[in-house]
Image 1: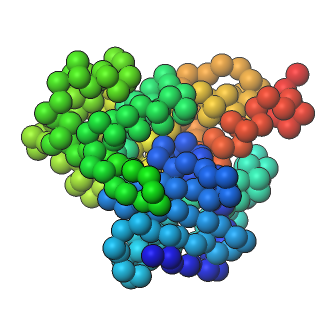
Image 2 (image 1 turned 90 degrees about the vertical axis):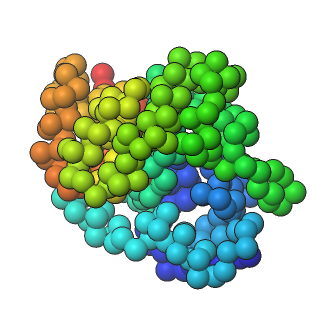
Image 3 (image 1 turned 135 degrees about the vertical axis):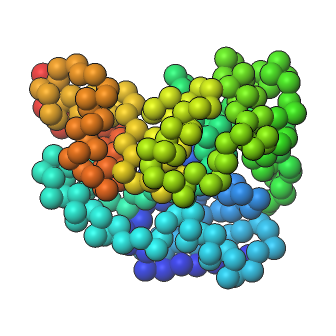
Length: 292
């Protein structure tokens, strides 16, 4: 079933799908992306300010529309957000280059496991590991002649022995995933209710999971719970903040985070995404960053 949404501006499918928020979108030869959202496989095309979605399930037009608008955060006025961000002179280059970036609204469980896997890992390896977890333990979904898989539920992964989970090549993270699955499946932490809590309280609950430190918790808050005041600090963000505000001097992560949260306030999460993509793309260009 095909569905078209027009007048979506700003929106950049490439940046959104390949920006390190989600790991189950794959670029096709025609520049479309195929991904799995919940129990649905879909192919998304963009041309100018409209997107075309071809869903492989029996969803009707209304349900496809609801799913897409929610997942890609299409209701939010990103033109206004980008204008507000451009009031910060240091953000202008990143915002202009990354115009059309959006923060996805993903499933909290899939996001939690994905970012546990992300620790000290490359995007390529993260995607491979998640694909194996889905293939081994998810449910099959047929789409355009290929088989895709759902992300396995906490209840399913809670029953998987740690040693077996290691066959997905998640390494030392297997024990974290197994324990986290048992905690969620057993109701020890109400993962799907955390979005109702203030950001700090939700963060504290997330950090009870093994393998979830401050950065991973902030990624979960930002990419699945719409806590836009969360500001994950990874190696790219650390580098660019040190460059922008401290003349390249190395600074403690907590000081960098506090600076960003205070400076950007309710725009912190948005600022992080523009800076992350821009820095990851251009850090090696010394002219752009005035690095000598």
